[in-house]
Image 1 (cartoon, rainbow, N blue to C red):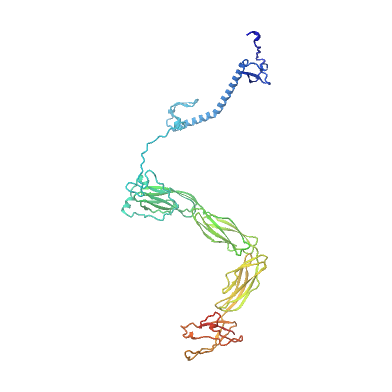
Image 2: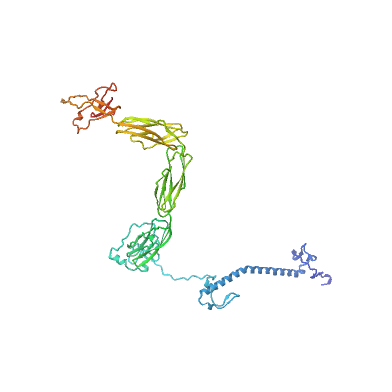
Length: 598
């Protein structure tokens, strides 16, 4: 190339070099490196051809790749360092474990501590199960399956149980077995069967269960029972007996039972403990007096725990209530496996009562009791009391009761009721008034313990504010007596109202003036009349009943008839009311009523 056409070259020395950054642009079919505005390295070569800068570009690219590669390698080494440490630790631990397991330690030979390789031909992956490629399981040749004849009872060499399937026997330990088999053999065949030793195959046909009897939570000094079952699937009889050596299980059924083929026998296992404990024991059972086995018994003995449905009760009378007391019911809950007994401690003068006072709550059940509140009439701001329920062999429970009632005050208007003399078998009524002296409605109830021969009506009711109620008090007695007592009326929310009462029940003295009546001879079909005079010597009117029906003691009395002799004109005269004219319209001519006035 002529010298005129050669390009002008500028060389950069180490003294005047300046670093710059370039960017790649495309112009036509050529790539051109252009310097950035902020660059100083290739400022004088802007727009030059790429061939002039190819060597410098290649150098920059090579340096960049070198440093990037260095950074990647260092990062991989940092990440691999913990894993390498963990592998080394596992490797050392595996070798130490292997040395402990293998009896001949010298067989291993020396180790290379740098590359961590053991210099003997052992496959550690196989020994410790760390191989990555799983091995296939071996396949064993199985016998050809064949279906046996299905039978429900043993026939020939065929058995009810499957030859290839073991029957699952899961009896319910809470199911009671009422039938108990005899403890001795009844025939020579049974005696021979129960004395022979059973083979392993025969023992597989004797099913027992459950293998563990868990009583759960049992209350101290409480007896709980469950059942251990034995099922005989043999063709011969067997004899089974359980033996309990623990004192807590001494009440179990330990007599032997001869179990016939295809039958199931049950043994009652009873648990009773005097102490709080966590019981773990075993019971031995023998088959044919030759084969001994055991089953486990577990129990947690705790104090008796009865819970109240609620620990707080509030009592309040409603406006329309006419009862003298309020009754609320609560449940006593027992979540244990044994019954629990309770007894309420109630003070004699308490306004709260419990019914029933004592009882028993069944296992895993509940019992309802009634709490009764009867106001005392002394406290109107609320009567409270803490009631105690004593639990036998357990912790006491407490019930807080509070009752509210409005104040009431009632009094009888009469200071007393004096009936004076009252004829026997004749009712004498009188009126009495009970007044309410409060601005609220009062509720009352007459105490049913009335004096004998005294009746009161009404027996219960309500009295409006500042109002009163009228009582009908009557005295009636069929015998002579003296009444001197009182009528007690309970007022809800107030004191009792008392009304003294006295009466004297007497028998009137009535006499017949004539000593006897002699009719003499009477012609058949005719009537003879005689006069009978009755005198009442009492101070009260007497009512007499005349009985003319006793024909056995007085023959011919049925032919008598009593008729009035005259009409009464004053208090001192007397008259006789005929039998045919009594108030009951009794047409019997042989009986009647006679009224006598003094």
